[in-house]
Length: 220
Image 1: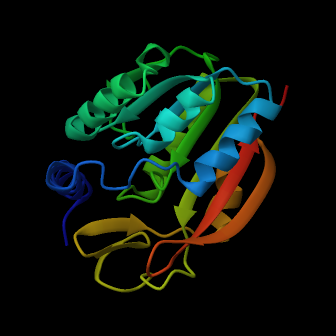
Image 2: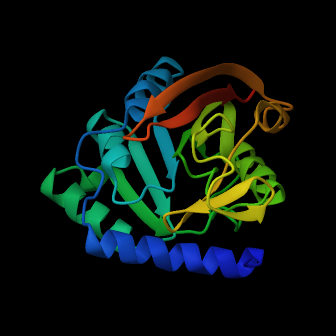
């Protein structure tokens, strides 16, 4: 079983290799959670959106097409290169900025500097519970009062929970991808001090993957 640092490095290389081998692997259409999040952000009066774990950019580009200014981060330089190329092709590069960032590190943004944050399946990657809490504290720090955080995670009702290689802390590796499966207690813990607006169960993909879409906001 790999330790946390070794597992993180292995996963980063795996994602780099995956994006290199399969450019635009998720297609151009936004994820269903991103389309929903755009409506939530608009209703909250958001203008600036940060996406964590943007990959090759299908969701970041959707936010830009919807008129938001987007800051897209990922630890894969290959994914972000594909995102920038797509932004230029779609003529939204003026509304999209990118930064290489590992979610384990502090965000390179000032306090209270964005209106909305989106993370599709980022928090359920190979992160320890402690690292997940630290990441959410960073999201809280950079959000303005009234700001909204929408994230999705695979949960313990997923078919891959308990399967594959166990790394401890509810992290299981299957097919080369390590996933931290969330129970409801973790969702509630992460919402402490926030307004927990919505927890929605849904399915995605061929397995299908079973996820929660969580919406929480910073009190004004």
